[in-house]
Length: 309
Image 1: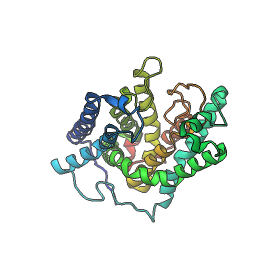
Image 2: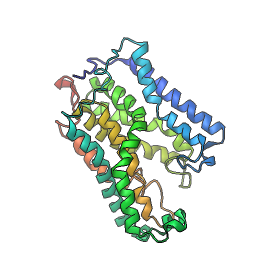
Image 3: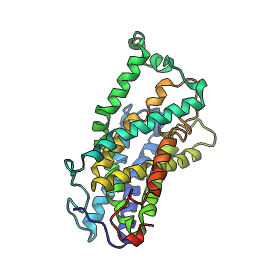
């Protein structure tokens, strides 16, 4: 069975953070020095610079491996929470696969209920961007196709890349902060995850740079989102006693994150929505995360009872 450190190991945690942040931020520095995200428009796959952002995502995994190799931290499948426990913990994988889509769709619905003037059921902006090929495709069919992809191939493909982050955040840092107690471990891991995003947020990757005060509000909004989503990912990690459901959940979130943009009209404030990283769209995730952090039996690492509160 997976094990957790019985005491806080500051040296391991410091080394992990140094490598995880250092590796990824060096990649971001190279992207910035060679033109930044303006060359790609922030659009994944548009150039080799954006491909480097995939390398960026593996910084936490590199940090985890370095700690295992450079310290006395055990290096086994169970200690690294790599055993999938798929058959015995299948429900956690199902939750990780579908819950991000449910929460995001609820959030998108809330966003357009609050900002109905930004809702375009004809999807004119997206259809125009796709060119003549989309002219004869009904909006309903286009939306259904995007949703089907986000619920099927999207999580499967994105899990591979998301593992680079989750093997570090939920597979190492969350476990090593567990002696501090349930809530601090979950919240601190979420904050670290959000701060780790800051260089690419500052270059406009998640929110662009067209909102007031950019990029600072976007950097704070990212921490907000990672704390909330990180709470849900911690829940499935501890439930399955494996890092793999967190990678699935992270991949599923990335797959559905842009769905709300299909219906956007005008120029929405990206800090609010309709992307899944918007504060308004994240409200359903906030509700679930708040319940998980209040419920004694949820998100409960195996540490002494006195440390859980």
